[in-house]
Length: 276
Ligand SMILES: NC(=O)c1ccc[n+]([C@@H]2O[C@H](COP(=O)([O-])OP(=O)(O)OC[C@H]3O[C@@H](n4cnc5c(N)ncnc54)[C@H](OP(=O)(O)O)[C@@H]3O)[C@@H](O)[C@H]2O)c1
Image (cartoon, rainbow, N blue to C red; front, top):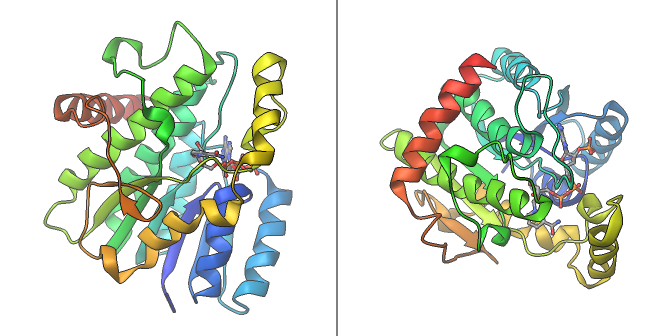
């Protein structure tokens, strides 16, 4: 990965930070998009120790807001003419329905629309043979796609989160088609159940359940292995449109394999991103 440029979201914590540190240690230069300047600065220091003098950088944005996503992408596009890996990884579980200042349901905005917006706005800066890696989840299982319910008017936190991860797979498969013939590959993965901040600070019964589960979850470093693999391994050169778990292609549900849904999601995301 020496000399490779990796743009990554959600790298101030958990799976993203572990992946960023591993890739930096392999020689890559990391370009982070972080929401919290303090955590962004702390991760930057760790990256500097992992790969000193590489010139890692951090841009700031709340990725649940499309205006901030677009601004960060524009700043990066101006300074980075050849991006080798775009890792869309920032995501969260929200137990209550919230609507952003731009009118988007927050899980949909952060977990799906930021992936879409960064890919759309940085696509022209991807180097030949670049890789897009999207963090999805096995939580997509059991959820259904509905164009009428993208903004989850009826809200159940875990279900809405799972559906956002279904969107990550649909988005990955459609993006692979869009980039076909360009040499750019697009894949996604399930990291496992990972003991990150994802489990923290959730109220009520579900919060209690998540805190009980956390001690049995794998480390962030383990959870990052498939991201690092998809970003760096020769074994997946040219492989595109696939969903991985434990560094191997894994099965997706019929819902996630539906090409009509993927195309409809892409068209609606294009419209929403343009109007946000
Ligand atoms: N943990 C699991 O078991 C698990 C399983 C399957 C999939 N995943 C997925 O893995 C990805 C990473 O999660 P994690 O487990 O590593 O959780 P985490 O430790 O909570 O990390 C989440 C990262 O996303 C960033 N982020 C959250 N909201 C943001 C916003 N509005 N704008 C910009 N950045 C934002 C956080 O930044 P701050 O530092 O500012 O909070 C942090 O860097 C997510 O997509 C998640 O859905 C996790």
